[in-house]
Image (cartoon, rainbow, N blue to C red; front, top):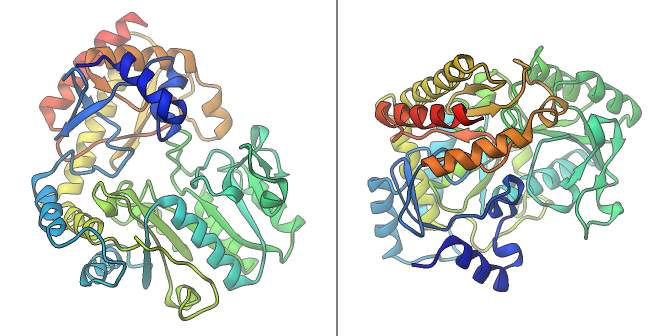
Length: 426
């Protein structure tokens, strides 16, 4: 069996950076990535058959755990009928109906193959519907790697978008405006400065890409009011928070009705899926009914539809979601107890089945600026030592974690015992 170092060296010769998505390189945490050989329940196994308790869950979609027997059976049965058709299937209707049943704010849904594709298409739809060009996004919120969304700004300054990736011309992001999450005054100022020019505000209502940040002071409701006042659309990117913060997503939890919603991860049950959802009035502007063009040969892939439908059917029965939520709360409570016991500047919190771990003396991390001031060096050591002990947290101080149906009491307690051993060394 080849070691992870040899595998990474081999990978680096044929794949840029040795990985097909940057965070997999473990570069930010100062480590060499392991190579997964299989996943089973709450565990993943590496190239040497080392077992890890997994709190990444493929970055959210595996809410039932790895290789859930019913999901695997569904995928196998569907694969025997063909991998893809490039034509309509009844499964697309069934999954659409299931999603709309869980998230009643929406009337129609269009499936795509990734979260990036979903947000890119939602913004095009918003621009086509409103006949406006500019969008507002928030520093620290990630909406995929479409050119006009790859922008950032120092300390949440009010500024025109500046590309944060090579290969993105300034002209591609000139219509992207930046504001600070939880700072409604920033958003008001942009609406005043660019009056009648803003097509939409796009936001992760509960960000999971700058660790786990929660809205405060009715921030989401105030966004809804500003968008209504200015005839702009409110887009909730719930690729990560959908079916995680609550079954109906952050919009259900906070009782906010966005104009458009993007989904992914959980609705594919581990297969590549994304979706754009909204009212019939807005969604019918997509071709072939309207003038906003969007297409995808693999959209509505039958295997992905079957995996997602099976996942949602399981998630919505037997009080399964509430069970996962309680397990997440047990994990977070235990982490905070350990931090208090050893007097270390660490705190954890959760919402639904998502959680965040922060190495800071602050007990309320509400802004992007709070996150970047946390002790990243200490987190990196915590990550490496936790991994050595058999616990796999997200390999970044700026990513949320996820709990699955398979994280039972025994696994949570095992996690806390291992983490306590790590905390002692910090």
